Image (cartoon, rainbow, N blue to C red):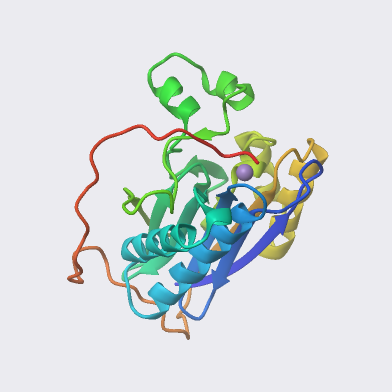
Length: 268
Ligand code: MN
């Protein structure tokens, strides 16, 4: 199985800074998006710090979930050492290809992973957001959630605490699949049908990524917009990107933090 990936990020039409970031590292087979938050430039520092720590950890041989925990520690430590960065955090949605063609997605926050298969778009991740909880409790419809005034409040973020709970998803990839990672600046502006239409129309990963950004801007571009499009093709991969499945590597895991609700504003 061979993966081809392209990413794009844009400040949008309202914000003055772009606090999003993305990572496409084909050498290690790692794809990620991050949406930072914090005063001044702290959000930008948070997303960049998380992505760099993630990349370094995967390159050193860590499984993706452990690499996200390393990213949490890196952001948290940086925030603790600088008053201007105190309280910064970021979303992080990261994907690697494991043995046997399994895509592993490690996820914190309200950025998302989707898979387009046979023309149908399926959301892989569940948002850590207030409106997602209200939808699950039946108190909001998904349509109401997309326009809710508190839709940018997230319930889990990377780097805010010394520990973080990371959700892990696995997807058995097939040739022809297309994976999308994106920040909420895409999904708050463009409904899933619109995202699917663009992904079906643009065969080339780079053109698809740019077209998604353009579509979000055409709809208002109220937030930073970041996308990574990963195409799955048949064939051998010349690079070494086979990562271990969870459990196949012995790595210490930190104790699970006690249950609590952390409400953070994802907006600047
Ligand atoms: Mn955002």
